[in-house]
Amino acid sequence: MCLAVPMKVIEIDGPIAQVEESGVRREARVDLIDGVKVGDYVIVHAGVAIDRLDPEEAEKTLRLFEEMLGRTQDGRS
Amino acid sequence: MEGLNELKSPNLIRQLAEQLKHMVAPPAALMEVCGTHTVAIARYGLREALPEGVRLISGPGCPVCVTPQDQIDLFIALGSVENVTLATFGDMVRVPGTTKSLEQARAEGADVLVVYSPMDAVEAAARRPKQEVVFFGIGFETTAPAVAVAMLEAERRGIGNFSVLCAHKLIPPAMAALLDSDVKVDGFICPGHVSVIIGSDAYRPVADRGKPCVVTGFEPADVLGAVRMLLEQLAQGRSEVECEYARAVRPAGNPMAQELLARVFRAADARWRGLGTIPGSGYELSSGFAGFDAARKFDIDPPRSEEPAGCRCGDVLRGAIDPPECPLFGEACVPRAPVGSCMVSTEGACQAWYRYRRAE
Image (cartoon, rainbow over all chains, first blue to last red; front, side, top):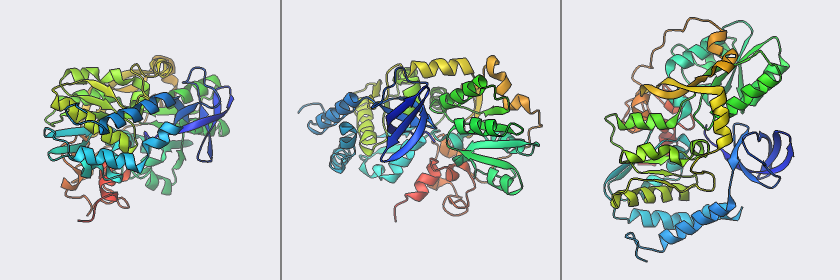
């Protein structure tokens, strides 16, 4: 039930946005996000966008994994 | 979003799993406190990537499962009030109450509406002004803001025939209660979407009690990464809050959502299936929103509630046993004929273990 899906904002009309993922379009309330813009990625749960997704942070997590894979357990590379 | 797609790369997942499997780690029991993590762990067979001596145990992270029997019975009983429509998330429909489920109540004539969003329940109330629409407000900090948005919308539009039976639960107090119990947990995989709202700092009191916490996302790579981060903390004698899911979670969470929650709800003691009453672990409606409280609006006698005989859902929810240790699991209790809520909900630990069980 806490399933929440990253979706892209396509259109905004007041507190309601059209969001899309893999060709599926939905309506989502955007009351909880300050200054939401078309093109933002948001996390949608039960019809409400609960926050933005930050693409830069996704990249950082990837780099964290690469670092994990490239070093031994005690931190030496 | 490029980074997101790369996180799903099978090659990355395989490498992370392989490395984790061969990690020299202290024996540890790590608890996930989110039903969506429970499903990811079972679905992708992530237990097979654990090093020797490391266990993953499911905690009270399935909102449908932790809703106590008496609140389910009360909601079902509201369905017998004249002109009442019960609106609920779909997961709740087949959960057995003491005498019947919502599905059975519907077969007997109750008007049960399954909604994707609490906003849909408000719209149903707007369309049917002579009907009283009662929404079952279950779920954690992730879901409560959506219910708050729905109540504000109903208030703004003067929709007086919408109300909420409020049974929301809060995760950090439940984690604290687990630490006071006899269940041995060495670290927590913290829920990703609850944390979007409350922020990763909310787990500091748990980490301060010597239990490392890692907030993580829902891709297999996220969960594997979180397990590794927890084991590193334990190996190094650290107990901190770390966030692997920074693409969605900030240390202080979503302030607009928190403001809304503080306006519509106030913290109250709450009963959990399996965990009993935990101080300050739930929400009730604040005085300004008391008019939306279904428990006040419909003054009905609460029905007599009993747990299903033999069901050990409560022990599963506090991590005291794994689902297969329940004598009913997979025999008397299966997803198509469930005895307990943990086998009904798609996020329940019993259903996840059953659905993705490995051939022996």
